[in-house]
Length: 166
Image (cartoon, rainbow, N blue to C red; front, side, top):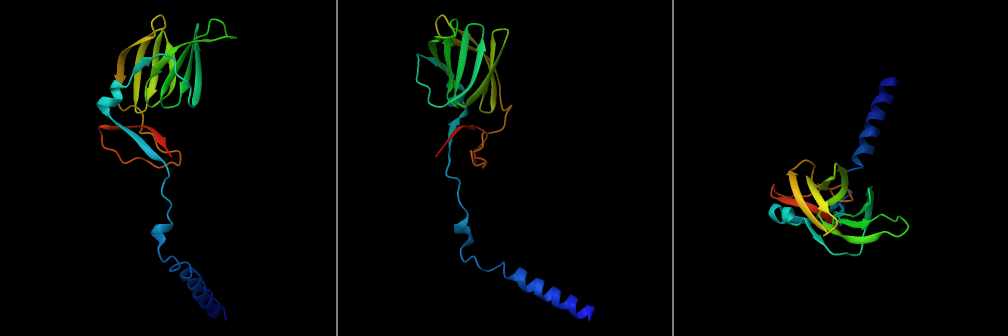
């Protein structure tokens, strides 16, 4: 009796599990593709993108960093807006540091450390004339940026993902 129940259970389980297969006529079409497209730069363009500009509007703000009388507001993957923060009730725009792919910075001894996508860049900033000097670049310290959905880009070693767009 127990043997018959075991055989019946195994046959029933086999029948149920086989029911899971074969219902997808075109399964590959049902897999959704990532709606985000990687914004990719060649390494030489990526490295040359570190520049200063006059004031610009913030598109998508990120982290805020305050050091002495300066306030840095990240514009996600675009750079940092710089303000004179002497009067916190009324910060004055100084300029914009374009550093594509950047999301965070830190300052120590007046040296600014910025993650620029896959690289760690150190620079000094002169607020008097809104200018920068890139002191050093540590290449490929961080992994490539993955999409907001978690997919990874297909790029070669000389290409850098600086952002993702719908």
